[in-house]
Amino acid sequence: MEPLRANMPADKDISFEGIRSMGNPVPLLVQNDGTGVLQLWLEPFGQDYWLNPGESVYVTSYGMWNDHPFEVVHEQDCITVWATSWFATVSDLSGAEFPAGSRS
Image 1: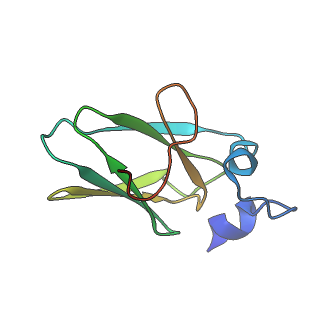
Image 2 (image 1 turned 180 degrees about the horizontal axis):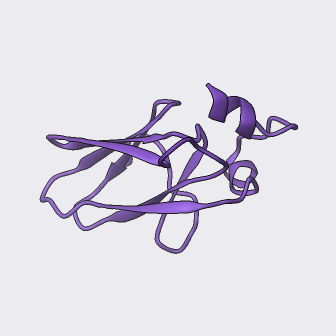
């Protein structure tokens, strides 16, 4: 809970831009090299993202953390990324916000 208390913005703006303004960015490249859709689950807020075959995104942690910025678990058809700072964004390779949820 300490990273949550330390990183919570004073104005409580946890939008994509609000989180990015926290500074201290550490990006993690996640790519789908498989042949099917890959679910990316971002914790601690339980956001889901879906990557098509060949698609890549950056999960970027912001603020401060204890020891390491991410914990990653790979399961069949799903990658879970836990941002230990409690605040992270998911963006495409150009830096634009990547849409959460299932895409048609």
